[in-house]
Image 1 (cartoon, rainbow, N blue to C red):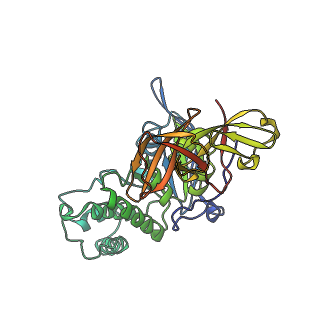
Image 2: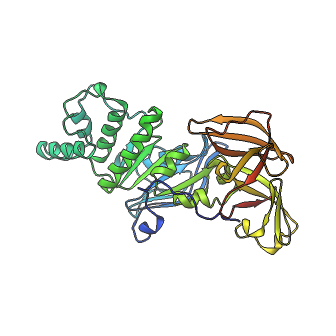
Image 3: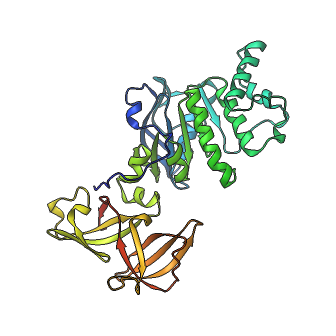
Length: 377
C-alpha cells in the first residue's frame, strides 16, 4: 500500500500520537461485535483509547460509529467481544455493567438539558454524592471552566446554542467521569458557531484533562479537534491514526475517498516513468512503488490542490480535458475536469481564475510531494 509524503498540517492545537505513547489505556475494545438479527452493525472492532486523548470515530451514516458509542455508554450490549474501562470489564460474554454504573459522561446531539432547571441546577444534576457546599463549589468550578461564571441563575432557554452546549459539557464533566462521550456534538449548530464551538470544546476538554471519544461524519471537524481519528466503514475500522497521518497516508481506497475531495488518475507504471493522462512523471512520484508493479495499471490519489487547469489558449501544450462542473467556495473555485481518457479530477483555483463549463483545458500536476496510489480494481 502506498503512502503520500507529509504536506498538510492539522489544527495547531492537536497533539501527536507520540505524546500519548506512554499514557495509560483508559478504554479497551477487543473484538466488539453488535448484531441486530441478520444485520451486523459493528464487526470485530478493536480499539484502545489512552488517558487524556480525544479520539474521534469518523465515518458515513450507517457505518457503526453511533452503535459503538452506545455500547461504550452501556446503552447497548455487545453481541460479542469485550469492553474494559480503567482495566475493569464492563461488557463481555458474562458481564454487562449498566450505563448508570459506569463512570462515563455523555454529551448528546441535542444537549438534553432540563428546561425547568437553571444553568447551575443542570450542572449540579449528577452531583448526588456531595453536600451542598461541595456541590456549589464544583458547579462554580465547571461554569468557570466553560467561561460562564456569571450565568448560573439563568434559565437554559435564555441561552444561545453555543452556551447550551457549554452547559451540557459542564454537566457531563461535573461528576469527574473516567471518559466523556460526545455524540455528534456540533451538528445542531450553525456553520459559524460550529467552527467556534469545536475549538472551544477542545480547549475545555484539554484544560479538564479528560479522556474523550467523539462521533461525527464531518471530516473537517474530526481532523481539526482530534488527537487520533478512527475511520469506520461498514462496521469495521479502516484506519486509526493522528489526523495528519490518516489524511496524508490513507491506507485504503475508502479512506482516501472519504477524506477530502479525492480523485484518482489512471496510470501505467513503466521502467522509469509513471504515465498518466496529464503527463509522464518519474516513478518516484508514487511512494513505496516496487519493481513488481512495472507494466501494471494503478490509480493515483490526487486532491484539488495537487492539480491546476489552464485554458488551452494559455497552456504551453495541447489540452487534455474539459471542464464539466465548477464549485464556487468564496475564496476559490474547484473545477471538475473530465480528462480525455475519461478520468474526472478536481482542480483548485483562486476565485479570480474564471473558466466556463465546457471549456477545453490543459491539466497539469503541480504537487511537490509523493502521491498515494492503489492497484487498479
